[in-house]
Length: 171
Image 1 (cartoon, one colour):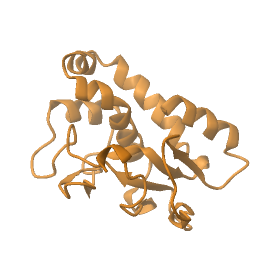
Image 2 (cartoon, rainbow, N blue to C red):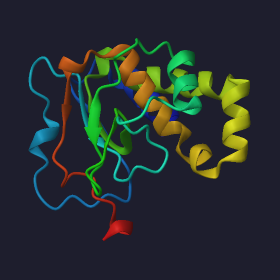
Image 3 (cartoon, rainbow, N blue to C red):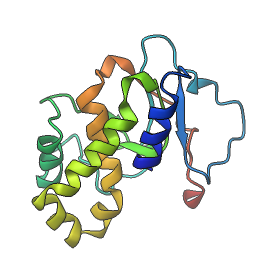
Image 4 (spheres, rainbow, N blue to C red):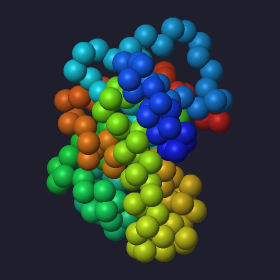
């Protein structure tokens, strides 16, 4: 996801104002007008659906998230709170990689690819993900969160409706 999105962003940055990354198994049931980002908004996102490996806002970041933020140089305090879609649990900014709208000139998807590579180079994260299948499977989403938090001010982000990117597996 990160590599294909980065390639598309690089190829299309000069040709389009908004680029939407959407999983191929997503079914669109009505016009997704909120993907047309208003001026001043660089990222439209959907939070993760469940807590799973997310960092609950009620506790300090654990070792995994502390290392993600350190490796990706996420500024202290940049991880704003979002609520998981299914549970409504407040977690630090953690986005579902199945759907995201960006301004391609900002380079968010290219930063996502770079962030994933940096996380894969971290010996601490390699060990953590080797031992934890959930974190291994979701490392790309942790990289996406870190990439957005490190490069886009919160005021330039917009949460998309919860009806966007509803996973059929949870139906």
